[in-house]
Image 1 (tube, rainbow, N blue to C red):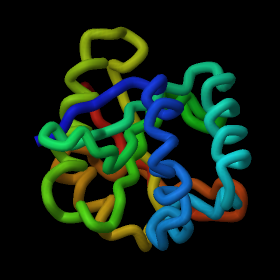
Image 2: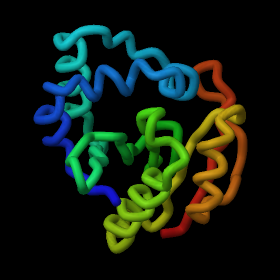
Image 3: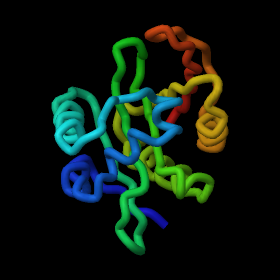
Image 4: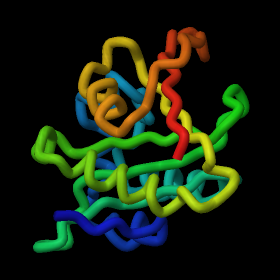
Amino acid sequence: MFLAASLWGLVVFFRGKFLQNLVNTKGWIENIGDRKIHSKKEAVAYINKILATENFYYWVVRTKDANRPIGIISIIKRSYLEYFDIGFAFLPDVANKGYALEATKAVLLMVSGLPEFKVVLATTLHSNDSSIKLLTKLGFRFEKENEVENSNLYIYTNTV
């Protein structure tokens, strides 16, 4: 159903303006935040920022049949969390088709043998029902609520 590519794919697929489109979707802006990326130059700067961030891993999810980028999965060690945090975002036209579940499972399986990923966290807004539903399907359990940068985040945990 899908093919995950590592971060180098961010630069390669940019010609299709995938990143620029993704970060400007309603879901991204409401649940992750407005990154103010409205041009190729801003998108390249954002990609370079990601590439320069320590303890930040990114995968581009593509369809197998057309090799079309449809979403991203990231794992990052955030300063306010004890363990790595996994996140995901997909284009609206592929929502509720199983891509996010399949791809996130694959990434969790890929990192499961590494000691630093023995426990993986996920953060989401309490209003992000689709994310909460996916995290539950993936076996994550609600742990606590945490205020970060004036937002109340739900913290979920999963032992990989």
